[in-house]
Image (tube, rainbow, N blue to C red; front, side):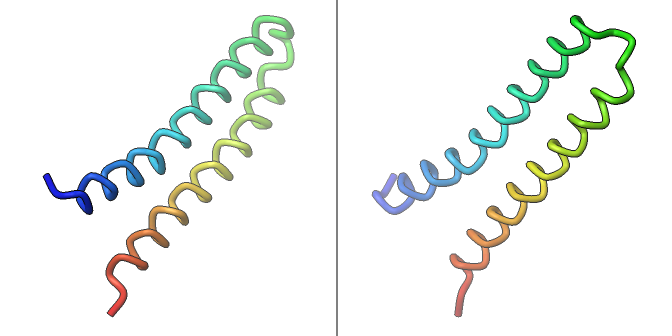
Length: 73
């Protein structure tokens, strides 16, 4: 494997692992809050859903920018 391919794999891996860690952290917070306040389930889920949507939008934008930079002509 060439050096450029290894660098590409590492950058792509970082761009994928950071949103995955964020989703895991949000899930952990969701479960913890649901365990402490079970009667507030809809409000807690809506708060986490908004954060999750924002995380997904940002991560997809970063991936698309990375693709656009690599395919620049």
